[in-house]
Image (cartoon, rainbow over all chains, first blue to last red; front, top):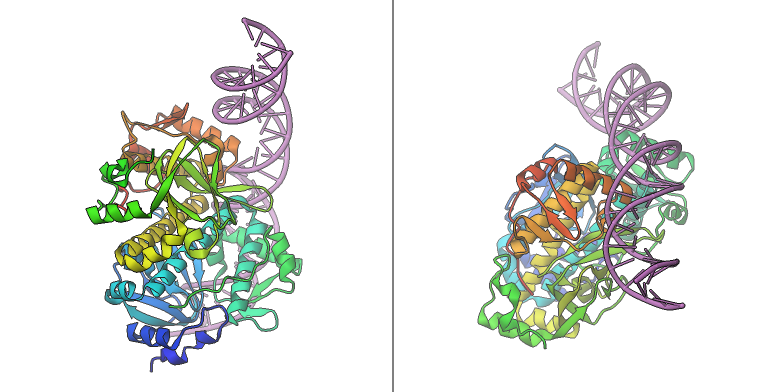
Length: 242
Length: 242
DNA sequence: CGCTTAGTTGACGTTAATCAACTTGTGTGG
DNA sequence: CCACACAAGTTGATTAACGTCAACTAAGCG
């Protein structure tokens, strides 16, 4: 039984701009169903012209590109509240794939409605653009990480970002949050080898800065970790929810 | 004397979606002036809440972020037709800086009008979102380059992209186009040291694949260069012009 | 019980960073 | 018009970071 937008669990999170009743009704009309998928399932393929858009309701995933050589670049990590499939909606075709890393629940929207959506609700259209600009911002940060930071800095940067997002999404309890990725995913996100990523994680663990094991990430002092990462800790910006 | 949109030189390029007369009139109304700047001038600063949006009319520039350590990450290269300042317009604040690398002419738009723009012309609002999605796509590619490609591949990738964009913009004559950047800019874009970038460019030159010197890039066989870069050559997608 | 996936560790090799010196071209002020 | 400073590009020598290879452990699953 699909969750009604009215009872959407994400609305409770302070990370998202609150919906008016009218907003909620509108999104409800736009929503065509719910998709529940297992870890490892690909929900959108690079090159596909998916007729569907999603919002991640529960669970986590990865966006990634595959190069001709078979190498994989993880573009970013998908968290609850993320909007998925915008590229297919505006550009006609996905430029990356999206797969689940944990069990996921996704709200499904109909792409065919997207244009109506855009015309009839300019403030929501604006929100979509906001999300695209935010994504662009985030990718710029990631690029700076991969390009300019050392392995230790990059890993610390990643874990800090994840922890901040986790906090904002309400996933953190006792400085611990679920993190259902493989080390290979992080390695592919940072352009590092699996082995080097493993050793770097080990060092952070030894230094008591961050412990990611058995699917959980524990960070004792995020300020300390951020210092290693050469970054400043900022609360994630409040964002629109689709 | 500011160029009238009606006589915009970019309209001739097949890279851009043609404007209807109505589009042209509308953009003309939105345009508040023209900015001419020298190389080295910064037109938008990271963190600024610029009241202005731009479209690059002539000349080239760079978008970049500066890390706490002073390191610089070049996000991408700005070409004629690029829309500049979207982040400030939707998110309130620029997340990167933009500077001119050659003399540049920019169309200036008023940010205060942006919201009206969005409400009254949904198809143009859609175009803006399209551009943001395109930018996201491009940044994903760049991330994959920096993360997964070797120095030689990454440099070859960059030069290939630039050449393709140059062709589409009509900047190429005799397999040669102006490229007013410093090697340091390319190094900062690819996360490589200046010295290594220089040596890599030297190797490509020795192998007769690409010769970038004295502000001009010459590529004899772009397919060959693309092969080194482990990429497939595609014509750049036709894009909206703001 | 054997197979597979994820994580871990040590030894070794290679790429790319760093350091340093030098060239070339350009603009500036005496 | 020369001397000088300054920016950009080039090159060789050395070093450090990271990748690759390989072997092994532990957990889950049919």
